[in-house]
Length: 350
Image (cartoon, rainbow, N blue to C red; front, side, top):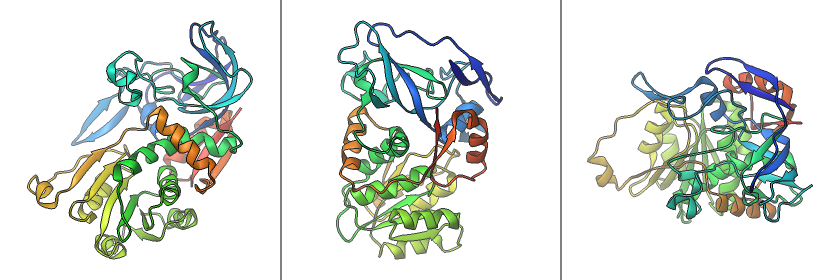
């Protein structure tokens, strides 16, 4: 099988030939037909996260080993199953829940494998979708998308479930209150569509790129704010009439974090999912004085992905702009993503 792998952090992606794996035990073999391209792949390829202050989180030391086929938004056809894989849907198309854990700890047994201290996420710690085939450890991680468009459904495995989980943490947001979403990239646009489907009546989209803000309007944003404006904070608060209950930060940069926390109302919630990097200084007395909650949200659980797909199947979630490219164009696609040339999401096809 062909596989597109990083062999050194900061290096190129190489096309290599690998033997097609044979599933064992409860494993299933999936022939990848779609693989979404996520901003996190840039951090993985670089080999670090920027912690700010000149400090980096080394992903090699965190347990990511090379060579690695990245790609954690995976959809494909189940081709083969190990002898212990119960009710494997052979021959059927499934979306893969990639946020795996050790499977044995109390967190995993509670269905929160995405919070496992020994993560095994596909495309991060084990082979992912930038390959013709991948191995999923158990059929339970395969989600039926029904008659949804496969290319539209693929990003829900990360972009979708990540913001869905973050939005749940941002609730409740009652009538008369607003939600702001920092960033109008793939995560941010998905967040707008899902938030509206969840019944949040007023959504404010914030970005520094006017073309992305136009896309945000198309996805259902009620108000857009270009945060490069000197009065961006006032614009956000005015747009919410002073009642900005929650901010979901899909960027996670110093500028978006500082602005997002400042804009939230008393008793508000700032939920961060973006991993751009950096650090901020928070005045500790302001947290109790403003009753402000700062919440980190990491991807989503298997049950949350199933909940999201069920919501999408109602027809209430506006589809994210998705473009298709051949898997062989993965390197160029990542370059385009890094340069900010992609609106919405790119899905690689096999």
